[in-house]
Image (cartoon, rainbow over all chains, first blue to last red; front, side):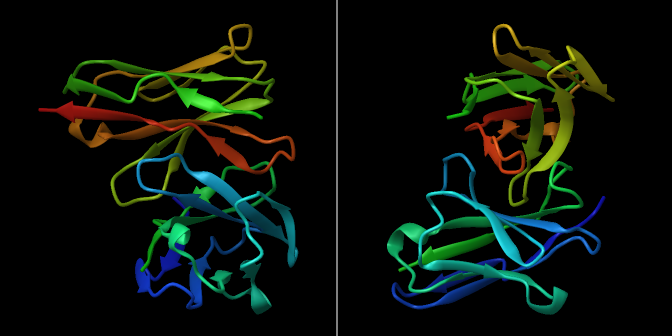
Length: 113
Length: 111
């Protein structure tokens, strides 16, 4: 089936540093999403993005978070500065339409020390 | 808020047996989705069942939806070791795009 790629697979950084998580969505998809999953807990929606704009965001999407997809390249999640509670697995997803099946990447495991 | 919850943390079965995962939700929905997440991977959609459907099948998978009791089930027949995974139900929020996942039920299939 359609594949979403995420780079890197793992990232360890010191608290206060900036991190950028990269997502390569399915090529013809138009909607992009980030979800956060803390170990042992349920996956939670962060943000979705369409036509160059944030469409929806949850309360987990703090001011330190930002997303963009410059010129149709990677869809990125940037956290600046990072905090200890940002340690989690971040999943990217994409869909063709807003109501269509979301295809997920394998996740980026972020550890903030 | 809409919340989807699976009823059990974990289930263990032997290959060839059937297993059923249950899910309950709290508000009205237009559709409910079942996802599977294998270790080290992202979730993958298995079945989407709409609110006007009572049952949906996909190979060895069968999902049911009871809107009166706000519950759903996912049954897997003739289980295989590769069915070992965490199974989530998910609904969509009022914006219609963000998925709201339950905590998941870990299904372990042993030889």
